[in-house]
Image (cartoon, rainbow, N blue to C red):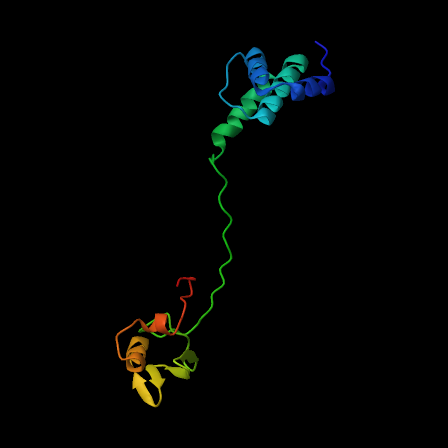
Length: 160
């Protein structure tokens, strides 16, 4: 059988998926469920070449079987390890949402500019020390509210 691969490939590329599935069944002797056109074309042209030029020799088949039996087979390739950047940033043990000590948190509230300094063991507002940002917010507003929300601090993860 003399096969012109270029002509066959051009003819296969012009076929619809339904026609390719029929052609696949002819050359392979079994049906397929796939509707992936490129896959069908490749498998059909491979099979046509194998039929025209001869398939693998029996010796090549045995060697391939030996190699396959000895190989550790993977369903998917292992993922490459991602490089990890380790950054050491001091975080307040009481609340990890607070910035590092020494930072000034500022907010405009009722026409006044408020400033709270972050300390290693708490917070300072107008010379008074507080254990939490919520306590500072309560001292400013007179009612309980979430300090991080009041001072509009966002978490490192991008939350609100």
